[in-house]
Image (cartoon, rainbow, N blue to C red; front, side, top):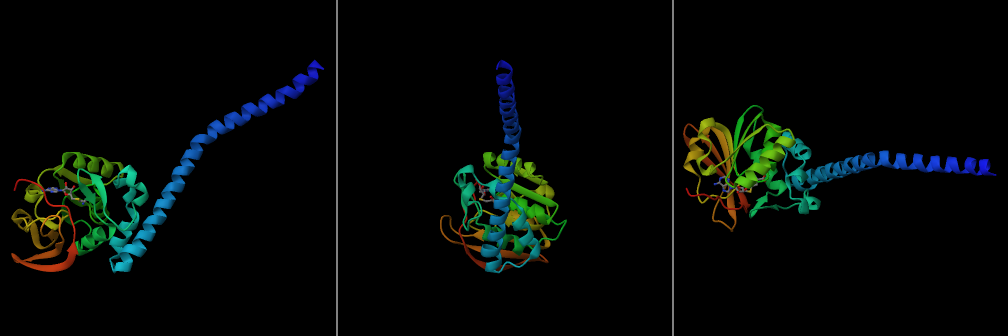
Amino acid sequence: MKGKLRFKFKPAVRLLVVTLVFLLTLCPACTQQGEITEEVAFAQARQRMVETQIQARDIKDPRVLTAMAKVPRHRFVLQEYLGQAYTDRPLPIGHGQTISQPYIVALMTELLALKPGQKVLEIGTGSGYQAAILAELTTQVYTVEIIEALGQQAAATLKELGYDVRAKIDDGYYGWPEHAPFDAIIVTCAAGSVPQPLTNQLKDGGRMVIPIGPPGLYQTLWLIEKKDDQFQSTSMGSVIFVPMLGEH
Ligand code: SAH
């Protein structure tokens, strides 16, 4: 009787132990699986974003479309906006600032017409998202942010994702003279007028994209092309950006 009981009991315990060990070893795999599924869902949302918000509004440059489909925008938004990372709108990033609407990022990037290896300067690093898009298109990306906490966070995110972007905390009104001239300059905050240091730091044949106008209202997005020290400005429509800060 005793022997029989032991015989019956042992496999049950063994089964329990095996099940427990199995569940314990499975758990990290489950988490990993969950993360993979989440990344797939984000990639699908990103692809939908490109088709419905960007291609649908006539952005055609295949390199820009590829970059927008590749850069994980959800890594640049605050945790509480994770579910809205691929929606058709700007989102708060703290300190009263915003990450721009995906379409505006694509439009401004397309207007720069960047070629691989060209040097680009961004004023207003913010989350670092626009800088990552630029880094998909060229190897030489420089970005300036005036709010230290944002600049540091953006630099950390970009590094984590493997983007080679040179970032500094400063008043971007003055550009980055040590690395001038630039083939392209993109300003992602609204200035009252075009900062002279930026036009000076633009290469001959270079392009600048900049919103100009009063803070808090609609501004005009301008494409400025420099040729033989002459500037040709083309209006690209109305936009709303946070104002350019600083003491200049
Ligand atoms: N390009 C950013 C969004 C820009 S929001 C992104 O992809 O997330 C505008 C940013 O410009 C803010 O982070 C703001 O702090 C910054 N900014 C405002 N005035 C500035 C200035 N004078 N120099 C540099 N950055 C400035």
